[in-house]
Image 1 (cartoon, rainbow, N blue to C red):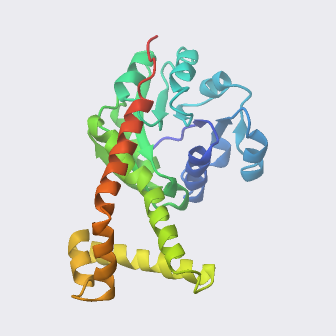
Image 2: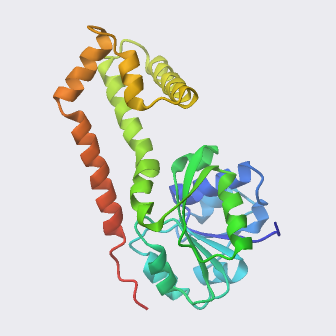
Image 3: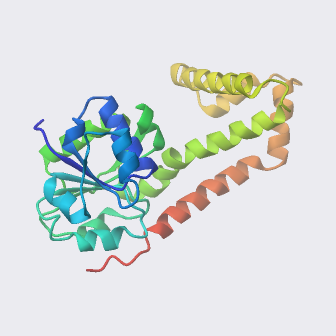
Length: 271
């Protein structure tokens, strides 16, 4: 894999997480990362002193080979259109929810190679899941380079374009769903332990449960049945959740998140 310069547009939570993870794994030198961020340049330099801060988005694009666009989907089309000529013969990677690959292609010059990916926040700790759309226009060399880059941050899955939105909910929204559930369980313990003790119990139990599911190859429903002995304490709680239709509520929450992801892609992408 040949060396290249990586440009990052935006230094929000995901932009920072991707940079932190790639540097942690030693995938790229800090000096080979160029960043343009209108509001966070000072904090970015504190985090990574050898990173190159560019004065404008156009300067950044002109200085690098691969542009990782970490801006909000609502402004992504305008940003890409403004940079359309500068992006000629470059690789553009978008992490914007809802913005489809065909929209990226429509916004860019035919010489620009585009890739749509959806990473989750765990890339910062090298345990992320990154979804890559099969509809990309990268040549084999650049695709392999980008795939290796995201593999350094965790698991990579190549999926159909029309499944990217629901996939982004399963991988991107699920961490918040899990955290919501864990916080609710913590509240249910009525502070009988210190917060540190409670969180340690919860986190270690979640890690053990995931390991158990992976190693035994059983489904979540089968695990529920194994844990719930007749007339035991667990089945009492599960029965209450089912009586309150929590399964239906969670399924509806997933559909709501998917609908919102699709709505984020309903922006004007005409040249």
